Image (cartoon, rainbow, N blue to C red; front, side, top):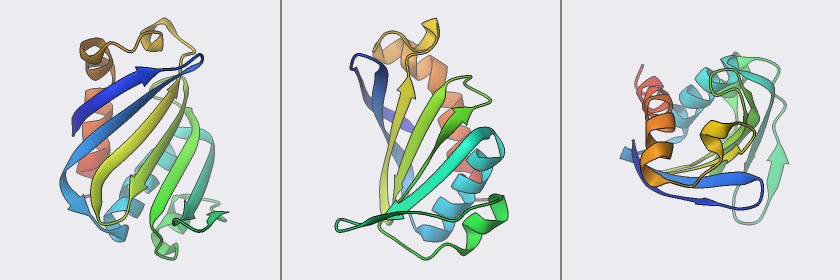
Length: 132
């Protein structure tokens, strides 16, 4: 995955990532299932331009049977990054948006190079999960 950019607000870093290929719903659900396993207090939302709903997800397997929607957002406390994170995948697109709370020194600055070093392997692992 390629980092397109990162910006900071008072409490968070917002970034956009470009997937290697556009992905469909099945691949998005595979990625979300991997993220679910390593996220505490995880919540999942799906929707489109007109509506959003919290998905009834009790375990990673529930993600594989979600009704198709325009996007899927998963948020919670990443056991890998050690901070709250929110990741949004867009159906049939190659765009992923990520918000990371600036709770550690690693995520204090919106420096492209430093943020990419912190997040690139994490994001690449998510993309690879789409194809397993």
